[in-house]
Amino acid sequence: MIKLAITTGEPAGIGPELSTQLPFDQLFQQYPDLHLTLVGDQSWLEAQTNEELSAFSDRLDFHHIALKESAHHGQLNTANAQYVLDTLTHAATGCMNDHYQGMVTAPVQKSVINDAGIPFSGHTEFLEELTGARKVVMMLATEGLKVALVTTHLPLRNVADAITPELLTEIIQVTHHDLQRYFGIDQPHIYVCGLNPHAGEGGHLGMEEITIIEPTLNALRETGIQLTGPLPADTLFTDKYLKHADTVLAMYHDQGLPVLKYKGFGNAANITLGLPIIRTSVDHGTALDLAGKGLADQGSLLTAIDYGYKMAKARATRRQSA
Ligand SMILES: NC(=O)C1=CN([C@@H]2O[C@H](COP(=O)(O)OP(=O)(O)OC[C@H]3O[C@@H](n4cnc5c(N)ncnc54)[C@H](O)[C@@H]3O)[C@@H](O)[C@H]2O)C=CC1
Ligand SMILES: NCC(=O)COP(=O)(O)O
Image (cartoon, rainbow, N blue to C red; front, top):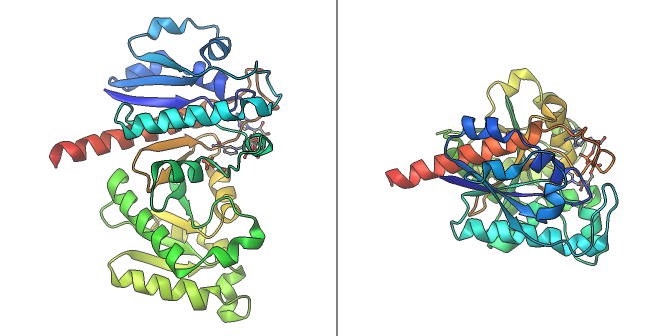
């Protein structure tokens, strides 16, 4: 059995309805050995669907964690911030104990967790710390395009200073390793964006390409990793390059993700590479404007489940043949 935990996310957002209104019949036919556990407040979750979920009890269950205060669609409440983190901790520790083979996360509202006085940048950083991972990489994937990021949830003002040879080396090594490990790509070819316009224009529009990015890529090429770049980001995202790229490495969040979302919003998943566990997620946020209205699109959650399931299968196969 491949057991995936779905953390149902911010209770005031669209996560609870997306998780409980999944086409379970179809999912369990498509993945005959899939088991799902919905992690969150069971009463609030059951109230989001008209379907009798107990009909799927051999393949679907709940791990109940009680809300601290009642939830209301579209209304954030700092009292429930710790509840959200508790759902993540349950799923991640369950994965580390092999109770689950992976976790799929519905969106959380980062601001309300911080408003509650708990510093929180995102699942990516939270899970890096919780699992003791050395370095994780945020990668979003849709049909025909994968984009990994060197920096994640960082104010733009701090991005250039964060890009060091050490960070870039670790990010590329993790990306290379996990493209092999989970996606079966023997020799991944990674296309790397520059940081500055025109990749620095020979040093006239910024020096980071010359002082940091090029020497780091050269050193990594010596170790056998296939790298192209740094290329100007505005032309890297064209078919001429993309048809050869197993993934694009962008220097910061809004350099890479708008392109990915333009191509695949609603059919993309966010995958955390470098963790000792499997974690995939939706490509969207809490959409408080849609919560409780039955208008939220299921596509990305289904894509995240698909990636999570296939990654877990790949790992199981690898373990069996080891
Ligand atoms: N994986 C996660 O936990 C993520 C969490 N967030 C968080 O979500 C919160 C809100 O972020 P926003 O930037 O407003 O992004 P958002 O994705 O929540 O909303 C952006 C726009 O997309 C629409 N939208 C989002 N998901 C949709 C769906 N499934 N179907 C149809 N329309 C959908 C919304 O209605 C809105 O118009 C923030 O706190 C952000 O940090 C954002 C991205 C990922
Ligand atoms: N844009 C993706 C995003 O912000 C999700 O972050 P995380 O919560 O998966 O770390």
